[in-house]
Amino acid sequence: MKKLCALALVLALALCLAACGGGGQPDPNLGKYNCVSVEYDGEDLGSDGEWLELRENGECSLFLIDSPDDGTWKLNGSDLTLTFSFDDGDVTLTGTLAGGIATLDIEDLICTFVQEGSEAEELYNSFDEMIDSIDWDEELEAAG
Image (tube, rainbow, N blue to C red; front, side, top):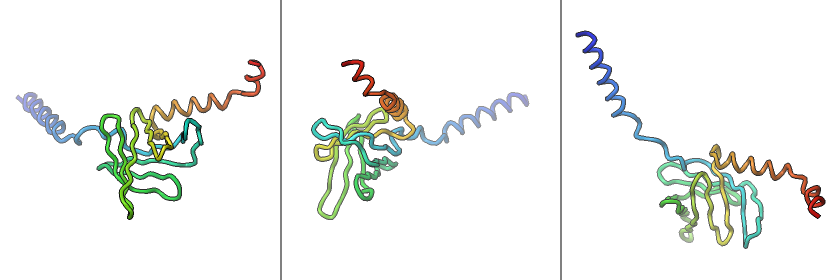
């Protein structure tokens, strides 16, 4: 009888823990994204410390030039929309977000951001290291 009561108590506790369990997984899109590329008309202009941060409740910050601007973000599938309110009106930026990579179209500048700590960041860093390790002069001499 004691074993049956103990088993019933364990099951009741397990059900209580399952019912009170924290509400699911956090949104994997939340976090800081560092800019890895800025393109204009197909030419890579490089990046210079730009970043994007997506926070809970649809809040975000975007750092492009002098200081970060705070706004809101929405994701519909992979379509990303950022909205910033200024004294002279709202500015809306559009792009995509998938797999830890966000792209934004900012007045024909295509900015690519990679999420810190993501698999995409690891792949980007590995690719970047591989490209940096190539002796391009030697490769051109061998090809030519």
